[in-house]
Image (cartoon, rainbow, N blue to C red; front, side, top):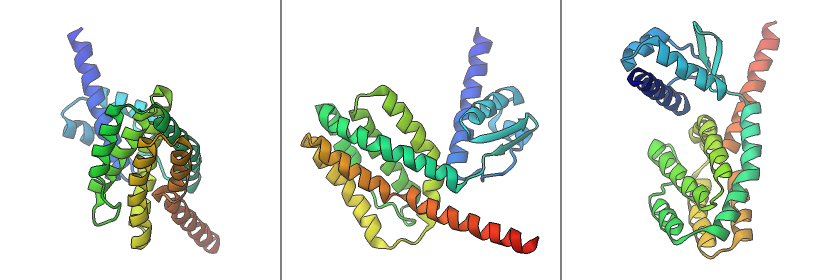
Length: 233
């Protein structure tokens, strides 16, 4: 039994590490995974690493042709739009339920998360994104709907790669200031038990999100690449 536990533990370690590298962008979309090098770097054999690769392939984060050819999944405007559309439906529901069901402990967690928020700009980078996620996670948990929480956590992870594209864009100060302010307004609405108000603000918040900006940028990139291919042929 001890060997099984060690295997499972190493597979979990490899999974968590690869997943973080993919979502943070340190492993680039479309890049081939150098499995022997990764296994050596993580201090493990290929077996738990390949277990992790299969798990990430089932989540759509790795394209796996064979165990010898695994690549980080590419990014596309189509996937970004699909993620955006689902969040546009589910996030407002979570906000409405949070306003109806939040406990004193939920409000304490939300208030603490709101106090750590920073404007999501290139200047603040990962620190701002981490604080941003913590606030949304606290809000999701206040909905007290376990299925919804799991779905939104997964959507958030998959949207992170696209969110970072949006972070690279130069939107100016006003959108980031508004985004920062809206989180505090969401807290106030949830604390007041205003489900309809929290739902409507969350929908507007998602519509103006970094993922939405990323969709436009990716569509432009894909158009440009398509035009270049046409000219070359």
